[in-house]
Image (cartoon, rainbow, N blue to C red; front, side):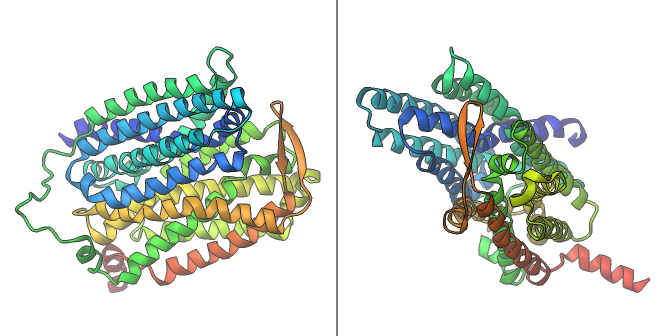
Length: 448
């Protein structure tokens, strides 16, 4: 029965949900148009994205138990919140553009409306939508949990590669524009997510404890291992996202800075493929390992090596005049994207290996709070370094718009991310203990 239905009941709905909500990462492709329309500078407008990621983490943390009990209500709430958030954003961009055109003064109400709909409401849809299919996938694909969750979470990463060019084309179409784009996408994503909601089902043989049965609390489950074990998982997840976003937030400018002005869009799409590929590839690879934590050690080691090479060679500052250095910087961005994605896809399976499947949605939800905090910490850390430790700026013309870059500032971001990646590796090796499966495999090997 499982082999016949697992794709229809888990994999396809998981992809439909995650390919929709993953378009939150396309904000950088619309923020410029939104900024121009409502009259606020792009840094102010970009807080909408940070708020969305914050509420993703917070809603996942606080609604994890709710998702655990009823994936159908959770996926429906995700569908409604995400589509309303998208449509509401379009409405307030329309309102703000009219006010700005009429008075020449930006509307505070429009900005607050965008923060509310794109940030808060859509963020709640992101958190519930992200969690809803994960446990279901692991239940259907018991032997390849990493592959299953990686497949859906890869959809979250691939959404940027699919959605970004579509959004740019719609914005540049005179008959559509940025406002109608939000309305159209709200309808399209509602249909996709609603179909995913209807299809999503747990295996018939899986038994969730009823209200009369005593179920251990999350803290009781976490205390089955030393608390430092969970703290270690949370911290390395947080630090990996913080480092990833610190670099990814300046990705387009980095490509331009090292001399790939004409190919910045193409390289951005390729980096999104690496992000999605890392989600699927690292999680599927981890299925073959006795201790899934090994995959995090590999991610951090790769990130440390490539960051150190780009730092020692001064690749970002000198990349424009040296193709080898430029390629090193591009390779770093691709590796960071792959590791960033792989860090996401392996979290639920790593948690299930340590704490079992009984409360995995709730525990995973709490862990996603790291994503919410890192969604602010990563971009703000990078912006602080560029502003306070950067050098002379360079202007590039990209699709008729001026993009300002700061090569020295970007180079110094790598100092911070290298330190944080090293700390992450130490945490991974010291705090996160081997799973029971890993200990049994080690004992059997020693017995031979």
